[in-house]
Amino acid sequence: MQRDEHGKATRMCGTHTEITEHKLLEEELRRQAHVDYLTGVYNRRHFMERAEQELSRAHRYGKPLSMLMLDIDHFKLINDRYGHKVGDTVLKAVADLSHATFRDVDILGRLGGEEFAVLLPETDQPAALDAAERLRETIANARIPLTDSPPVSFSVSIGVSSMGSAEDNIDSLLNRADKALYEAKGGGRNRVCGVG
Image (cartoon, rainbow, N blue to C red; front, side, top):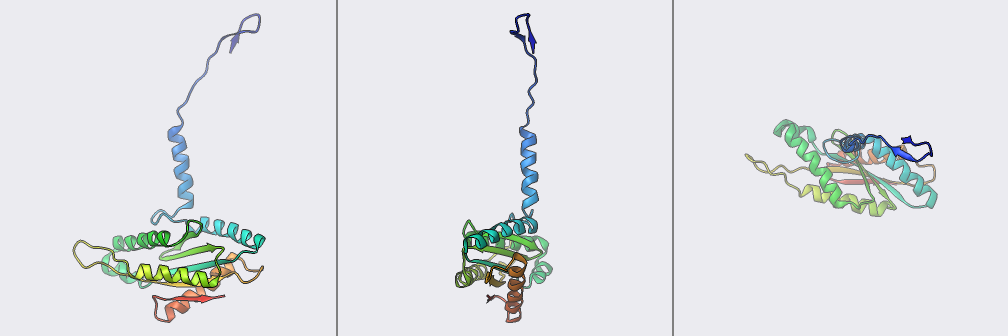
């Protein structure tokens, strides 16, 4: 800024920089830090962050909270028989069907491999078991079309746990849901099992 002898501005010089591309890149990096690249659901780290927030809210307001853990049955056989591209399509289908089945407030994350978790805020054990059964049935009825062979069908086993006391934390909910998941798998797969 240049001024005359009376302090009045006579000249100004500045620059403008287009930052749209930079802002878009920042947003994409932020998304990649939170989302599983293949399925589009939250990655493990962000799922755990969101779950901790919901757990705090549930404790604060005395609301129920439930956790589902689901695992695609015989996923290795799907990869071995049809290839990893079809396996990836199955993973995406599980994520899409889960999104279509659950509420917007429910938190879905891919924990790793073929294992997913869903946190159900304000949901008690009976309602969580109903939601898990709806998802199990929806997935069992899904078919992935293939160009040169019959469609691929698949199923999931689901373990359900619910908050039972003020001492419950996300790890204890996940551990109990994991035990229930292994009970479902041990009981023949394509089923839902729950623990308190």
